[in-house]
Each structure stands twice: as C-alpha cells, then as structure tokens.
Length: 249
Length: 208
Image (cartoon, rainbow over all chains, first blue to last red):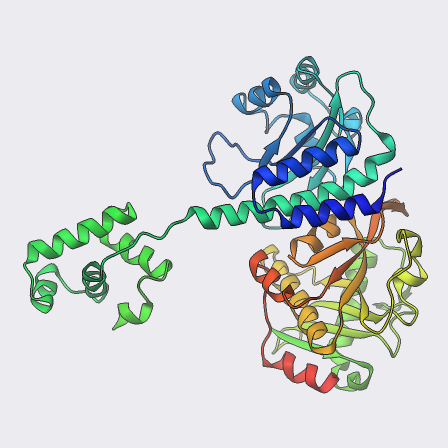
C-alpha cells in the first residue's frame, strides 16, 4: 500500500537537491520503491535543437530506446506524449488508444519501445500556463505488470517531481549566463555612444585617439558576441552594466 | 489593478465588487466548469459564503470589473475540506486559528492568458502577504490535479494531505501550502511574486 510518508520524504529530498544528478538519484529510488523500473521527467521540446539549459530532460529509460527517441525526434509523434496533451491526469500506456486514435506509425513506436525492453507504464502530464508542456512517466520492463496500487502515488510524485525539475532547470539557466565584464574605459565609450556621440566626439571628451575609441568598442562587442553597437547598448542595459539614466545622461 | 480585501465588517463598502464576483463565479464554476454547486439566482453562492467568509477581490479601478477573486475560510468553523472532503486527508484535517482554507479561485473568463497569470499571481501573493501579517501558517485546499500542479508552481512549500481520489468524475486531492518566513522569496524565485498597490496594505491593516 502506498504511504503518504514516503511521498513526503520524496518531496523533502527533491526540494533540497540543487542538481540534476541529485534529482536523478532521488527519482530512481522512488521509481523502484513504487514498483516501476524506469522513469522519464521531460518537457516536450526537441532537445536536438534546443541548447538551452532551462528545459527538463531527465530519464533512465533503456539507453538504446532513449537514443532512438531523441535521434528520430519522436517527442512529436510519440503516442504517449500526444495523449498527454489531451488529459490533465495520469494514464496507463495500455489505455492510450482510448485517449487518442493511434496511427500505424504510432503503433510501431510503441512496438519498438517494447523491443527495447520498455513495457507498460503510467504517465502524469504537467500542463502549466506559460511553460512548455511536460510529463513524468514511470515504466516497467516488458512483460512485467505495472504496480496498480501505486498509481495515485505516482500521480502525486509526478506532480512534485516536475516542480523540482523546473526549479533546478531555472537555477541552471541562471548560472549558465555569465555577464561579460567591460572595463571602465569601454563603459565610458558605451555611455557616450548611448548618448548619441560619434567616435570623434568621444575621442575628444576622453582625450584619446579616435582609433582607440574604435578599439574599445570593438572589444566590448566581442565580449558580448554582438556585431553592432545598438545591440551592445541594449544588452548592457538589459544586464544592468549600463543604466537608462547613464544612457539618457 | 486594484485589490480589495473583504471581511464581514466591510461588506457594505464592497457590495459592488462582491456582486460582480458572485456573478463571475456562476459563469466560471456553474456555466463553464459544470460544478455541482448551489446556484442563487445570478450568483454561485454556497453555505460557506457566510458572515465568516473573507475574500480577496481584484477589480479594475475605473470600471470596477471583476478580474479575479479568492475566498478564505476559517478552519475552526465549517469549511470545504473539513465538511465535504475530509476523506481526501490521510490523517486529521488540519484546522485551527493559524490555518485557513483557500477556495473558489475565480479568474474572469474575459481575461487573456497572459493577464490570467498576472491576476492569479497577484491574488496568491496577496494571500501570502495577508497570512504573514495575520499569523497564518498554512492554507489548506482541495484541487483538481490540473490546478494542483499550478498551485505547486507558485513556488511555496506544499505538502499533500492525501492521495488523489475520483470525486464526481474528477481526480481531486487535498494539500496544504505552508506560509513561512521565506515564502515571499520562494514566490520571487518562481517568478510568481506580484505584489499589489497601496490599497492592499491599507485594507489589510483595517482588517487585522
């Protein structure tokens, strides 16, 4: 019988962990405790194209299946993912044909998953306004029955797991962005550019050669990986190196 | 956007806001969501909308249009979880002067998606601020699973009170959101902190 205390232990641990590795360990442990073999905590985006770290993709599916899944872009046609868009509550994979009308291709996707060792499972959708849809799925090895008594526990764990994943992804995205540092000379030039001065005027104000001003600005552009001065101004205002007050003067 | 905090002592001064809220509640819960709840003419109003019920109501300042609202019930009196859904709690229903129940979150159906989020965040931020000012340590609630995830996404620390169950065809579950010294920061981290204007603190002080 499922125990609420176990769910609460999971919630406490998952709130404390700040890394994907940590969350993976906790997910693997609760997955086994519930009587499942595999889990996948994912947002439905194409991770081949998205290089941003603020999306969730954590799983311990059979390796060959996970690789095939990503390589063939199955996130879009995978019947489990498609079905998850049509419901707000967890569902058994064996019930998917009651939720969506499966195409021949989608049936083949499920058959392929079974050949790779993935049997039945239970998927909890996570639809949040303003956030890419996601799911938390729990699967069993092919030929094994899903632990029917623990589906409501899996439903709760899925909801809290998605929230924990979202928090870690947000932290990673925040850490990932390192503000480029500008020298005080570069910032002076930038402030004057923002105020509409030409390189010649800036050179006069700062008492340096015009070519030196150009060097400062080019170096600042390189640090921000932008080509144009207007991009540089917007970026530095956005990340707070330059304030609007500086720019308006 | 203006927030009104309504207690029984301030009903008179907020009559128009209450009227619009009860009408929108009927539109949302009865007409759209088909909840099996009592209807009172053009209003959705039940036995818990009594003199002890309190409300956070958000209105447009000029038109007075209802944007969204929340009902706050005392848990040492009849309330939804204690009286109607106690079977959703594995243990005792959490009650007492420091626990309130949040019910009837109603967002105007006329709002665009982006505004719905803003109004939702503003209502819950106000509920947290109200709790911190009044020594409330937790809000209990009953939610369908879709809402359950949204409640978690606000960022506060939540604990399930039981496993989900099917009630009238919908899977619902009970939970408690803890109000603690860092709850405002958790909202900030989650990007859901949306504090109100001066109207809130004024009304809250009157209410306290």
